[in-house]
Amino acid sequence: MITQKMKYALKALLVLGDEVRQPEPKALTIEEIARRSGTPKRFLEHILLEVRNAGVIASTRGRSGGYSLIKKPGEVSISELLRLIDGPIAPLPCLSRRAYQRCEDCTDEASCRIRKVFAEVFWSYLLIIESLTLEDMLRSDRVAEQVMGA
Amino acid sequence: MITQKMKYALKALLVLGDEVRQPEPKALTIEEIARRSGTPKRFLEHILLEVRNAGVIASTRGRSGGYSLIKKPGEVSISELLRLIDGPIAPLPCLSRRAYQRCEDCTDEASCRIRKVFAEVFWSYLLIIESLTLEDMLRSDRVAEQVMGA
DNA sequence: TCTTTTGTCTACTGGTTAAATCGTCTTTAA
DNA sequence: TTAAAGACGATTTAACCAGTAGACAAAAGA
Image (spheres, rainbow over the protein chains, first blue to last red):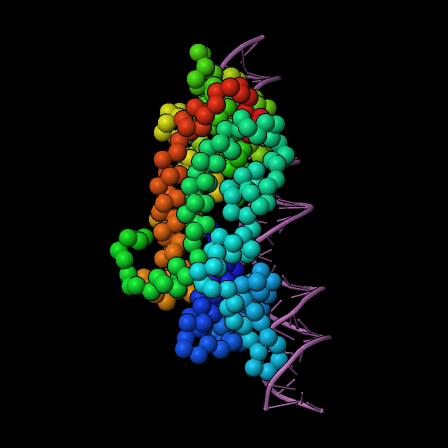
């Protein structure tokens, strides 16, 4: 399960992504982003901070300040955002590329059967999710496919 | 990330799975399973209870009691075990089939862009992980006789 | 029958994380 | 100069994770 925070981050980026595609994009205040995305304003602060520090959005302070998307939607990786907000994606620390950690109780990684089986699943999963960008989300406006029957 | 508890569950099932493939399989005590799998004994109790209630293993009490695998390894689904121990697999509650929950803040599920994008990823992921069984794990590398290195 | 050996069950605990909220400070345009 | 905006650390509440502890129940052997 992804966290609520991650959902908020995505919603906020969708708002900013929609805005940047407007004829005359403006910077949006936290207030406005919170309103449009249905996110608690004070919580959104922290989230936008992190996203800004990752270089995805920019902020300007003071009057007529606000946030705006500075990367192109096609260059905003969903998996990177996941890592940023929710931490490592890998099912086991010993399978994470960016946050590798040896399992303390593990004597021989190469022969670990748990690692082996999750590795297979994980690589396939990674392949899919690493290709996803904000653009894919912005584009997916097309109404209701029936694929997702609960 | 899967929990430590899930890792313990898998290790315990590997021990029991290895045992059931022995010429003369015996029921193994918690003590023995804990030793072979490197799991805290008192914690393992809880885990084995849950796994037993799911009908994967059986227990007998008293002298010469213990636990043994009652399903065939090929019929022990890893994804079911994941659900049992760690809860829903889906990235969003509204994508879970067995533990469906509407997102409270969601006005229209069919048009939710977050749901849509994660649905695509999730179905592919499910397809892979749902096919995995204990047998796949047991088969993968019969070199290491002990599970400790998991 | 009594004791030992095993599993069963309930409760508790200490640490960490999730999801915020609060107060204060800094920056900037009008 | 001041109101409107973001920046940032501190605190909070509840849940969850990873165990531990103690009492209880059943089964088998002496």
